[in-house]
Length: 399
View (cartoon, rainbow, N blue to C red):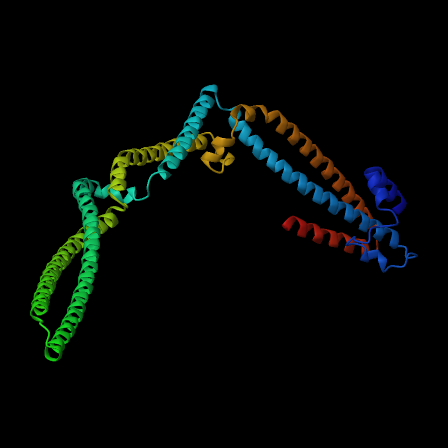
């Protein structure tokens, strides 16, 4: 009986029976059922044959699951394509127009966003301060002019102050020179006077004329020194007054310069600008910036409306399963191509269904042989193999 079952199995599986000859694969999960048996045991051929059949049945089940998954995928695609086929030419044209409009709006939005990035980021904060900035702009320009003028005056006064200090130091050195010269001159005159006195007392020489000349010379030199010293002191007093005046003006201008500097710093921080020129450019750019922001908001609203229209159309025509997003659908969809590919998927579906029928037939034939082996086995060892196969098949389908 087992010989007839083996021949019948060979007729069913052809080459597959040759692959499971006496050298059965060691990886088979059913190998343990006949490996421990004595080959002389009458039940050994039936148990080994049943193990081979169960292994083939599991392989058939795996193939069936794989093909069934492929068939499911093809059926989904056919359902989508059937929905496209059911669309009228007018509906297809309407959908194309909506998708084209969506893509055009999306492209325009990208361009607008790129143009918007070229504007200064401070324009966002400038929008609520525009009127105030336009009102303050003349004051900022005047403050910058006055600040530049004050900076120049302060620099000039600082230079003048340094020159006056240097000039006073020179006059101090001149005054010291005059004092030293006067002391030296007086000493020389006393020395000459002493020489004349010695000549007068010891040599009894006439010294009237030399004395007169000496006195006149002393008086002339002293007058010149006095006049030069008087002029130096007057120049020093005048220099000191000039220094006080320069310091006073410098302090006043520093106070005014600090006021304008703080005012400009406050305005620059308030309007997010480095100077009046940048602020004026920002004010001029506000119109273009406002137009871009308004246009982007309008495009966003139109995109939302178009997306809603496309989504409602797809839902009404049961095409919601074909897209992840409207944008992705609009970029990848080819309506004409989808309507042409239905024959290809129908061929794949027919081939998959034919393979499934063949696998079902093969499984039924294997099962019939297994049942025949089980009925002919009084030891119920074949039944244990079949139960193991059912458990493995159950795990396979549950996973």
